[in-house]
Amino acid sequence: MPLARGRALVVDVLLAVGVAVVQVAGVVASQRIGHAPDWRPLDGWAYLLLVVGPATLLLRRRWPLVALAVTLACGLVYAARTYPEGPSNLAVFPALWTV
View 1 (cartoon, rainbow, N blue to C red):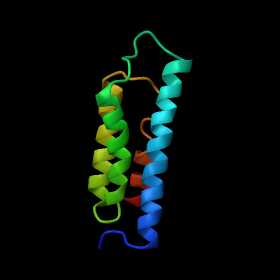
View 2: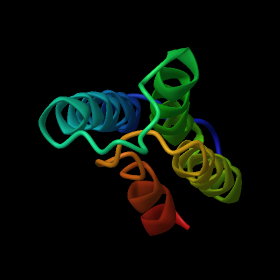
View 3: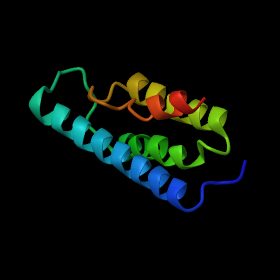
């Protein structure tokens, strides 16, 4: 199956950008509103994990299992590093749906 083109590419880009915005905005809001003492403050690694997962959704049509594995790994690493809770695993759901 080729990489997404035309309308499918637009849908994939909008999905990836939308999920990234919701993930980043959600965890920033979570950190400010419901801060727990054991949460690690957001740093560069946190933002990288929050963006790489959704960016991988651009590959979901061509390599669905790779997209699922990367989005899941990003979510697990984010959680393991005890960053603020929030919609940090949102990218897993479109990848899972595709698989």
